Picture (cartoon, rainbow, N blue to C red):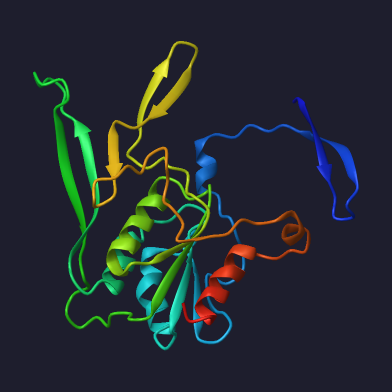
Length: 238
């Protein structure tokens, strides 16, 4: 194992050099869980919190029941979700809306830029399911990637969920894999993922409606400044 030498500033304000052993990581680190504690809980006032990094599909209905009397829900999408976007959007949408446009190159066509386009839509829940009418915010940052970004597209289309934090990774789209000599595997996407209006998502990311970045002081104090800003935004009645 090799060692990485890092120059850091500690909580006491002093700067120092530290050494850390390097460890092997690959794309599977997308799927480790970012947080612990309750997956669904209540914050200040009548504001709910849901960790989409750990929420599973079979928990969605119960989650909305438990938070039915809240005025807002903060969805934490700073991580990787568990295919919950369809179920979540169904509880939020009052009608069908386009959530994303997927464009794929058609192989073998004479046209140099022949594309097949698919329009993905959110659909309201079946009759009898209570729609959540409160406000919704989604926390995001550079960890919000691929399926996490697609979840954001579905939440935005369902009820105009506001994005809080910083730009997402800008790496949405199904993965194609290619193994090259030497045993290395390269992953890439052959799809263009676009917003419903046709604007680009990849290499740009989802754009925050309320931009807020963690600070060194906040990290030293153990505060979640992105979540704090979301609660403040809701408390101000924005």
